[in-house]
Image (tube, rainbow, N blue to C red; front, side, top):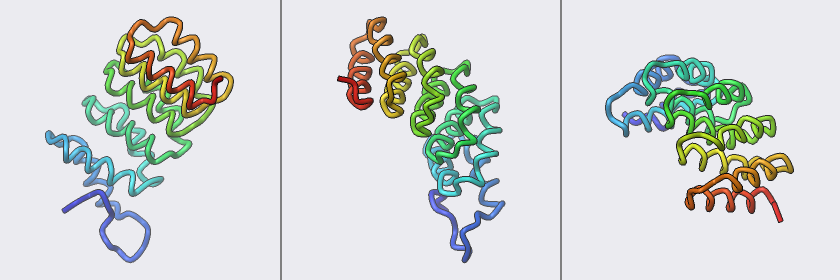
Length: 171
């Protein structure tokens, strides 16, 4: 059974059993099963948000990663505060996905949090934060990107920052 779409139930509401099945599959040892479960949660949308928020505190970083990914893709405003908190996660993969999710939400309040992440030890987290700043745009995001560019030594990250500046509409 594939979980990237909901079963035909005759209505638009997800079955509670489907939600529980998808949540359990986020812990599956198979990466593909976890990805499929995450897409199923995105298909469910808003009703899956509270469970995904709770999963940001799971012991398994892979579950936290997929929960952050689902929250960003669902795009629900309730995910803003939990995703900003996840920027401080001990696992870089989770920080990366939290930064990406904040960009997908597009909330300008995230700029200050993403600016701080531009000093993350992991270059992929910095790349994700830069891309999200570019997606959010605005004068504050442009200033954050310019500041990050001045302090960034890694060429690949600098390229992402430059692209984000273009996306943000910087001259």
